[in-house]
Image (cartoon, rainbow over all chains, first blue to last red):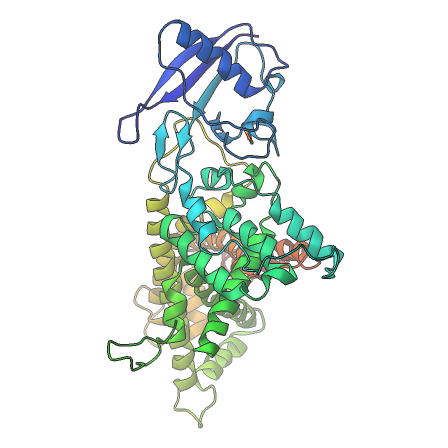
Length: 250
Length: 240
Ligand code: FES
């Protein structure tokens, strides 16, 4: 199949960007979206032009680096699929595809389709962990966890931090990411001792950079891992409780 | 954290809880939800009370008088009413100011638009128009008060009863139409707002979640249905 790509090109963080048009010819419908871009880049390199910069690592939907806006949808038109797992059979011959980087104040563009997602790291650093004395690993199942809780924590832990939630949110809010990173710890017994402190810290850092949720639900629809906005409700509840706990402690 | 320590190590007065809450964007959302709930209670009571319009002019006027003399003589005449008004004004101010500040925050968080024709995947019309429907309802509220509370723009002669004022106002077709439009905006605002407040407050559980949408729809239908019936009834001559 043959496609026309309109790709956002931007030489650096403070350079002005613009769309460039490229033809992708003889694309196999079995290739992934990134393989299609590889092909286009091959051509560019051969012609001595600067290849299109994009991030990728695992190419199997687990590292979360490959996010981009494809035709106005985070990770493209297929639900619950990262860009690297998106296949060209989702498009048809002759299509024009518009490709842009994530756009949010929290994710400044570094180059072309690559954005700086270190704001996510700052959120996790502020409390997305548990403090334990490590020693030899304890026996499995020593801490009983109700199946429902384990399942929900696992659902939250599926977050790969790709940033599609922020990219899709008209408010540039990072509620879905932060709530998932909170929930996978706050739902489990190991997460309880630091629950209040963690919630306040991570919400605080989130609010330094990102917008505020208006419950559109666009993030949930964009999330390649199908993380539910129920976790956002849980974060809201935990945050209010943490503020009150903090108050009683003071 | 809520207590601050000065340089000498002495603790100063703790920051009031509401302020601590208000400082965070999440806290502003709780306060918007709480002030929204106050508004919902009022809107429902307002609609239910106005159903007296269908009983008789006397019953409706008596109801207005009852509101004025609520808790009298424990409180002076109109005392309870003014107290309620104060609560409502406070809730309204919190709701609007928090909304304005959060909107500004959100503009900063998403300064650049997507260049591609980007469409919403799931956000419905009501959710996307909250800011506009909110402003429309606010403007309408100003008119509504000037019309029926203060009587500045009411066509009824001086000294007319509350019932006569309502009928005089709604008899004018453009005004009746204005009430329909304003209620449509209010309906859209409630449809998203009532659902949304459960999220903001964190009132969510697998069993309860499916009910939230139904609740929002039912509440909106009841309130807006009742509200719309008044100008329509006057226009049709059912209430005259
Ligand atoms: S490249 Fe790792 S998730 Fe796509």
